[in-house]
Length: 546
Image 1 (cartoon, rainbow, N blue to C red):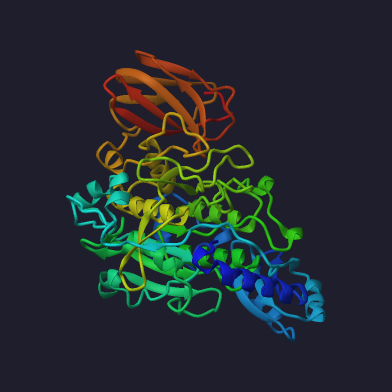
Image 2 (tube, helix red, strand yellow):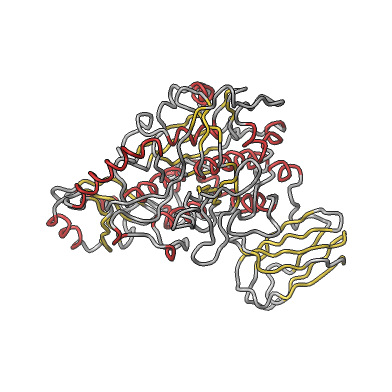
């Protein structure tokens, strides 16, 4: 979540008043968790009743089974809760199997807690501080604006060129057919901003949902989502051009800047569920959560393990549904918190840090690792003086990982368009493999700044290639590699991208790896030949003897 420094004085007043009111008022929003999904009337064998065709096809393409978590919550449970006097059901949450309710009646809450199908109740609207994800934008002045030799991208050139995205665009990959869901705090004036004219006129603005107000109008809320969207979707040649100017977009509001509370994490979960059901390929979110105004409910760094916070669990779930989830790392690198926020800690998401035009990590960019030792961020993009659009279409620049993340999300959409057979995890690993720090990832910049042109032109070959054989697969004790070309280096990473084995200067056409010590899981192997060809394959460590 973010705070605009332009409003700092006013926000301090708002926060003081808000804290006073809420500290003297009753919690009125709860998450009610159910024990099961019994007799809910839906069946895994008939997914079209609760998933779009594109959502079903994404699962088929990536060999992802439709399972219990895909099923809606049991309608009868919802109806019974809704029938309790003084209770409003705000949202159904199928991934966590429950509902968000609103009530100020302790009697109503007691009745709900007595229902045999209710597992637990969790208060949600405690006041909360949020990580600062972006900072004040300032208008480009004519005297400071650059003159570009390749001026199609205008003010966007530096951030696009740093990622080599123009290579994708020149090859005809601008995101056509890809769906990106942007989960943010509002998209003020997107319906009028000229940089989004083609988005609207070509029917690529697929729809909007406001999970805070429970309606479809996201255009009268905050501007932050509009800024984020402009780094991807803007198409104003000579002024601003985004990294995915031909993709299609869902605009989803989950964040209420006027009332900071835990319920917003649950609004985000509902938005992510909607994005999945609607068939989104990519979710971009520039929201992050750390501590609360009521310190009793603080997140701690120890909780940044991808398994504890509700929003991290949901981000991981979205990734396991085949969605590439791109998350801003946060802007706490120079604060006492220092580390990434959540859901940037989630398993299998692409966490994005911020760098300047020279590739230097921004001092504000939140650092890793996660509390359980995984490398974060995954990659970085330009988060210092990033070009974004004002509500009127003029170019501003802003600082924050809020703007680095969507640059990656848009570029990934174009690469995925080109490499449509990849799974979301294969795509993420490909992006990391072709990043500037791929051989020595760290917790400052992760795998580094991606080279999307390299990923497009030098897509790694998989184990089906006749030039290389990796066997047996699954393997239990020893993994054998045979190559037509001389093998130079071998790197093995786990499914989270952590390096678990490395062998350098092999200089042989065959080698074998002792893998007895590795836990049973899925692994990825990167093999570099003497002529610098790169091969990339997935294999499974099994407990069975081969």
